[in-house]
Length: 510
Image (cartoon, rainbow, N blue to C red):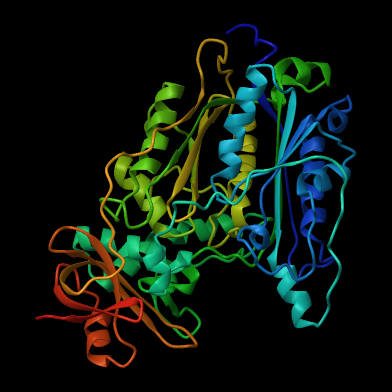
């Protein structure tokens, strides 16, 4: 392509903002103020000579954690229209204001959606903004302070809902496994079982994966925990690095206590020219795909996510490149298993010389709620401006390895006139049957142990004789069963299950 058509979507600006309670000049900003700072930074980053804020016709807001589940507490109040709240802080009054569904895939998926809107003439300038102030909420509550962060902003907006339907099986909740950490632990142990790796060895494998991530975070001024951690330190169980759900130690899971925001701006090439944005600032969108996985227990193989692998593979195919052509990448790292899932599928080594994160990853940079991938995209844009011949891959995970969006970016142009570069993959047809209650025998597939102030939850996922999946707990007073589970090798063992009080309970049969 010698001339870039006016309808070609391009990323024109990215912005990030963060503050930590121990920073000099810490201001304890609200989520809307943090997001406004990031959007202002993205506008400035574009170098536009025209009124870029006034040209924004679409703003999408990523949900904060506290508005991601029905009835969740919002201690200091919230905006009635987050997208327009962000816009007011930069003087933008878009035609469309959107509140996106829950999930870390949101930013990456929206890039594809808005790029398509621009390519097809439905939009000229779109912004994606997200923010979290969880650390500030906890800091102020500990001091007994309660600022009023509520906002009432006039104007229409499109609330897309929570998007949680079909992600989680109710039997998991009944057995104390409704939160992300124990659910990902089930996937992790399923992978460990398939690999035949012992518990301590697998913790070391996770530590070796994540130690280089901490090094990247230590050099990132936006990181919530910019401290280098060794693989041994991450893998070793101590009072400070306790088990949060077997096999995870505290330092190897996403850090949600952050005050971070990021914004991405996309425009048509024609509008970018009209606003005086130099082509050297443009980064091109070569492919975006998104996919949805089956519910946690319906997946035929709990050790992997075919939807995630399919999303990455299809994005590479659309871009017309292979994984070896990628020069920098960021794989969503709320836990180790989403990273391992992609590495295993595409033959990428955990110590690949390109590195696996651009930010420092969710345990160290910070798990900025549903907004993490915006930070990864912002870092990729800066990398590609410095290396126009490179390609970046961003893998964005949502839910319980339930949703995945992949983006391929480059400094060279992408032709949006001849092909559709944003695609949603078909749902997977094959499902494993799930049974809520069971009495009889079963074989253990995976497990986790979750220590807690109210007692330990010890749980297995198992297959009945006819192939259905069940979940069962060790009874609270059954120390013998818990002791066997703590040895870390229950896989394939036969258990006897009885139903009682809306839950299944198990003991080992041999």
